[in-house]
Amino acid sequence: LIDKYVSAAPCPVLVIGPGSCQYENPDCFILVGEPEFDILNIIEDLIHSNGICSDKKRIIDRFEDVDLLPSSNHSTLAKLQSRDGYPSILISRGCNNSCIFCHSNDFYVPGKKLYRRRSISKILDEIRQLKKLGVLFFHLECESITNKIPNEYIDNLLEGIKTENIAFSTFCNIAPLTNSEFVRSLYTSGCRFIFIGIESYDNNTLRKLKKP
Image (tube, rainbow, N blue to C red; front, side, top):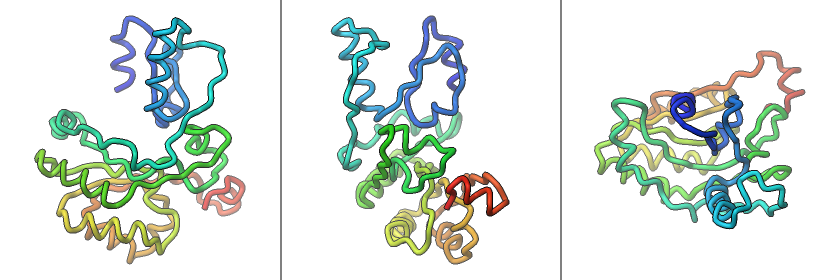
């Protein structure tokens, strides 16, 4: 999708968001930090003619409370679900692990581990917005829905989603999925697709990577 827009653009493209760290294209600029602050900073720099490649030092702003972020406007994205994908709902930013190969912790605030979760009530409110738009399937956006079980927050979240009777996908580490009870809980709550990251089958390698 990024290649599609880059090839059509008459000038270099700004790519914002943690997934952009995996994207390699010499015609793009990749910005590190909270996307909401990044966009405002770029506009400010352009207004004051600093240019987006200014060498001035900037304090990296961050959201301590991700509940302060407004919910996405899904009215347009909901129309794409039958063509180009489906809407996403954010449940957390960052990661509470320290795997040495991953960009997640350094992306939002370089050099500082910052894991933040949205309140369950906010997430369920956004799911209800999707349902009103006729959405039948969405993606639960996070680095991994959980790394360890039991997890009271995730248990309560899944129980809440279950009452909404809607299907979803999400990311998850392999370790929690070896627990049949947790997998059953995911399924009964509406999870129908899981993206799994498998870095190695060797436990020694996983330990060196600081993989939980």
